Length: 202
Image (cartoon, rainbow, N blue to C red; front, side, top):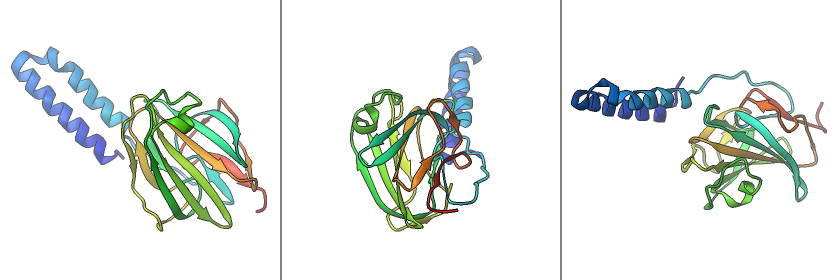
């Protein structure tokens, strides 16, 4: 499956390529055809098998670049490069209780300061006696964060909630009731990789 945005981009680039090929020849249109193909690849949206139980799944594909305390919470940071799937999913099921957009910079998303300084969308999900916060953080190339839900919406674990276009970052904040199950350097897949388990649930 492909996100509809990617289809629009690919069609626009393919049309531009056809015009350039007609005016200047096929060799000149090659970069546009390649970009159209890349857009279809970039905006892919594969189905994922959601694991059961009292777990939190990764909200994004990518590499775990940091696990650090942030006040009383523990933060997992995931970096998405331009070759990762960029469709985002909710780490736990529950109700979206808060959505806060924050303007900011567009530094390279692998940098630690991006967690606070970059443009981001901060989402709070409450469910089953716990609260989990995740941040969609724009990177150097990404200038467009998409969030398809609103406050009050109910979501299930691993449900699609939006995307960040091109290289970006995702931070997830967990309370003390969660045990982190990943470590820096690991690669995770949105919706299917378990990144934390509830300590108070069997």
